[in-house]
Image (cartoon, rainbow, N blue to C red; front, side, top):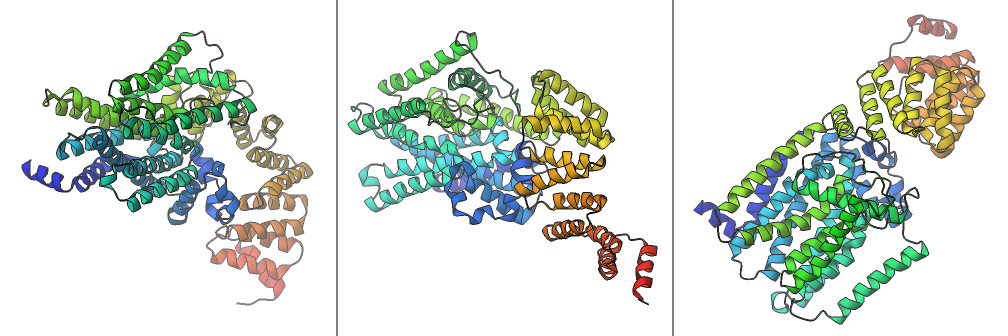
Amino acid sequence: MKKYHHVFDKHPLLVSTSILTIIIFLIYANSFPVGFHFDDLLSIVHNRNIQQWDSFLDMSFWANPNNRPLGYFSFALNYAIHGLNPAGYHLVNILIHLINALLAFKLTVLLLQFKKPEYSFRRLHTVALIAAVLFAMHPLQTMAVTYIVQRLTLMAAMFYLTGIYSYLKARLPGKEISARRRMFYFSITGLAFILGMMSKQIVISMPLMLLMAEWLIVQPAENKTPVWIRISAALTGIVVVVLLVTGLMPSETDKISRADYLMTQSVVLIEYIKLIFWPVHLNLDHFLPVQNSFFTTGVISGTLLILWMLASIFFLRKKGYALASFGIAWFLIALSVESTFIPISDVMFEHRLYLPLAGFITVAVIHLDLVWTIKRWALPVVLVIIMVFFGGRTIDRNSDWQDEFTLWNKSMKQYPENPRAVNNVGLALKKKGNISQALEYYNKALTLEPGMVEATFNRGIIYFELGDYRTALEAFNEVISKVPGKMDAIAFRALTYGHIGLYEESLADFNAYVAVDPTSPKIYMQRGIVHEMAGNFTEAIDDYTRSMKLDLSNTILLINRSRVYFRIGRLQEAYDDIIKAAEAGHQTDPRYVEDLKASLGITD
């Protein structure tokens, strides 16, 4: 143990990195086989932007933070290296989580240097390591780390933590840092803000967090608050009010008013705090109702909690507990973008706690250390219990993500009235081949939410695959009437029209799809088949050719194109295609090949 202490005293960052690396890879080892779930499908699997790179060559794409360009660029790099093998994506997510844990370690050290200068070198770094370990191991983090698309949250947190750390480094007392070094750290903060905004918009709260860091950490508590901090805080409030009054404040959905969303978030806050201290009922899709009245137990309780937390920031600072004030401020500010005035259709998601936990756990560990100063032997015992609990829960939660049915079935069991969870259980059953059961769940989802677009669409696909094209067509028509731009429904309706012989309607839908997305090889292939069935042979050839150019691996279409060439008397092209198909490994009709040879006068 003395040898360990000696190494830790000389190389605390190296030892901490080693410990965090071992712990993180140990508890997230079972996440590598986890496939793509939920929003992963649209954002990665079916997102041709990350597969073709065209968007990333357009500077306007990078200039719009709503595109989250840096985050999606990282997915594009993953796709270029790993294709759709999820292990590579998980590796990147885990490495970013490791970096964030190390940033939490460094930030804790810095906070203690500001507010606890009496701490010994070893105690300071030990407390920081404990905070980083608990941040890394908390089961709530699984949704940000294991859910691949939430790399956007991981990256935003990485730049956020970097920005706060760099700012505090720049604000160290004058004798501890040169002016040149100070400017370097300020520039890192600015760069981190820009890169963070290119990852996820939650970073917009960083300037307010910097202001709180200046007020609570840098400025001595006994000093009067500088005028520039007061002015900055007032201007921040004015900007928020102006945005709200003028309607310029962004909104992800217009189905929830700002007032209702804010009231709902007061209830959500209570749920978040429960999960922080007792992370047992974790759920991919928490189904909390939108609150429409202030006069409910949940809203009043949540509002009082928020007011108490806000008052505590000022009270604790005044009493000399600036670190406690900063922990509360960090938690509220880090949540503010997604949990205040900007309505989001999904009112609660666990990954939104990833960044708030960094500050919350850091300050909690610092004060836990202070509480147990008298009986130091008790602290390791408590920490070991917490770490075993956290590690076990994290591993167990990652096992839920292994299987789509398990993941959504657990979600549905906790919230049986959640139509999205019920619908997605149906999807998981369909992938397992349980068609009749899947249809039952789609119908149940529609009972819970009549007219639910996704359940209607999924039910239409079931009927399509069962050959009940008329019923499938009704479902697709209903979906398109509600969401005219739902391209996958248009594509399926086009196929359905084709199967029932309504070729004009089918081609009209295919043309509408191509007008929006001219890069889908599958759509050209399907439209080519309909053209062939309708007797539009030239158009069929064109579509088969386009499809193969967009997807060079789809050589099976050589057989289709050969057949069309044969029907219009272009025998040489028909022969060339069928030979290429055979060379590509596809089974061909030997009699057809011999007939072509005979017609062309070809002898072996």
